[in-house]
Length: 226
Length: 253
Image (cartoon, rainbow over all chains, first blue to last red; front, side, top):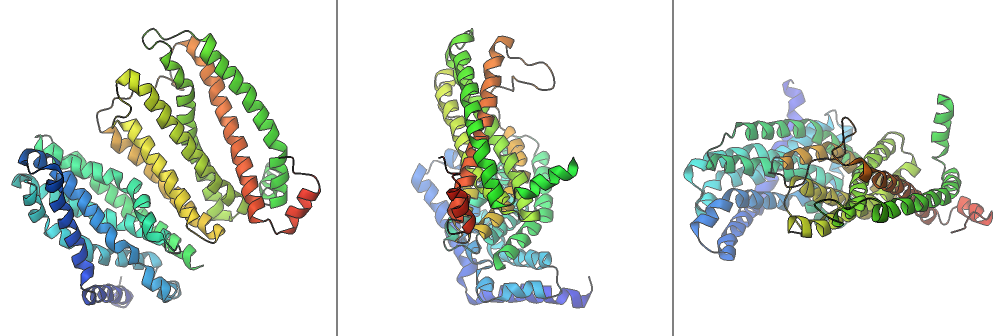
C-alpha cells in the first residue's frame, strides 16, 4: 500500500485518537470500571488470598471484558448519526480497512490501558507474579478479538434505539471460547501444565476473527445505512 | 426437473403462493405429527423395557434427545434461510428465518429442562458445567440474541437482514464454542446413537426414539409454516393479496 492510499486510514486513526483525548473519559472510564470491579470482588467473597488467587485470572478477564463493553455503544453511532458513515462507501477506501482502523483505535483507547495496568489488578487479587506475564499475553491476544466481536455487535445494533442493552447478549456467545482458552492458559500454567496449545488456539481465534469479522461488520453497517 | 425446482423455489417467494402452500401443508403436517407422536409416546411409555440401571427414568430421553437434535437442526435450517435472505433477498425466507428462531429456542429450552429433570436423580444435580450442557446454554443465548436483535428494529425487513448476518456469524461460532467447552472434563455421556458405526443403545429401545424424532421434525415443519404464515399476514394485513386470500375462504384456522 503506497503512501497516498494509506493516508485516509492514518487520518481516521488520528482523528479517532484525538476525539478520544478531547472526551478525556473515554480511555479512563474502562480503567475506572475495571478497578471498581476488581475491588468489589474481595469485598464480595472475602479477602482470603487462596480463594482470590484461584479466581484472579478469570476475574480479571471478566472485568476486562465488561470494561471493553463500555465504549462499544458509540463506536459507529456518531458517524452514523451525522452521515459520515455513508461517506465510507463513497470514498475509494475498502470499507473493511476503515472498519479495521476504527476497531484498532477502539483497542488502543480501551484495551491497551487495561493491559498496561493489569499488574496492579493482579496484585490486588494476589495473582502469583510468575503468571502475570502469561495473563498479560492472553489479554494482548484476546482483547483484539473482543474489539472485533464488539465492533460487530455494535454495527449490528446500530439502527436500533435501545442497542446498548443488546450488546452484552450478542457478545457473550461470541467471546466464550476466548474466555475459556485465556483463563485455561493461566490455570494450566499455575497447575504446571503446558500452556502452548491454549496460546496457539487463542492466536488461531484471533486470525479467524481478524479475517472474517470485519467482513460481517462491513455488511452490517451497510444494511444499517440502506 | 432442475428448472421446475427453481421455478417452485422462486414461486414461494410470492406471499400469496407461500400462503396457499402453507395452508395446504399445515393440516397434513399436524396430522402426521399427532400420529407419529402417539406411536412414539405409546412405545416409549409402555412397550420398551425399563433400563437395567436407570429403571423407568431414562424414558425422558425420548423427549430430550429429539429436542436436542431439533434445537441444532433448527439452526441449520435458519442458516440456509439466512443465506437465501442475504443473497436473493426473498421476503418469505426472511420471515421464515426469523420465525424459526423462537422455535429453536423453545426446543433448546425443552432439551435443557428435560435434561435437568433427568440429571437430578441420575447425576444428583440439576445442572453441571459440562461441555454439552454449556454448549446448549450458549446456543440458547445465540437464539435469544437473534430474536432480540430482530425485535429491536422498527423496520422488520431491515431487522431480518441484519439478524441474518448474526445467524451466519453464529454458524462459524457454534462449532468453536462446542470444541472449546469440550476441553472441560465432561460429565455427559458420549453419543449412544451413531449413524456411522454400531450404536451402543439396545436395539429394543431404538424404535420409539425414531418415531419421536420424526414427530418432532414434522412438528417443527408445522410450527414454522404456521408462524411464518401468521407473520406474513400480520405484516401484510393492509395489502390486497391478504384480503383476496381471506375472501376466497382460505382461513380455516
